[in-house]
Length: 146
Image (spheres, rainbow, N blue to C red):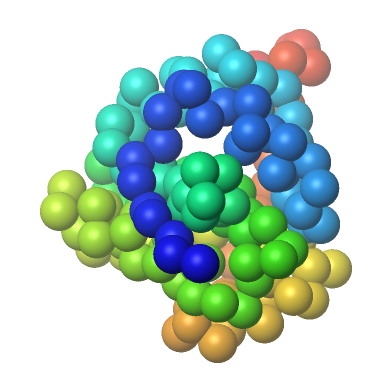
């Protein structure tokens, strides 16, 4: 079946969240609320993409940048469409769009336990960094340190 990759729209939110919820290794938070994704898409217009097959959403990739570095989030492909090139197409579409904006390097975050994702990214040429440590602070719980 043919797969079409196109820019993500807010109308894709409900099927995208439904896909994220059934894909192992996708961590959802308040940032993935309808309003959070709306802000993300507005801040990064035209960078996030979805895959469709037979009129149904079969994959997603959120992409954005900070002006220097690109980031990919929530690469998800419905189980029946995995290992058919959909993930590669989504990533290629995001990287092409980031390059067009002058972004020269892209990062992503993968849960350490997500062996399937780690293998996919390694197979597609991404390099696992062992010299960096990701640190986070939820600003909604931030008190005196902020």
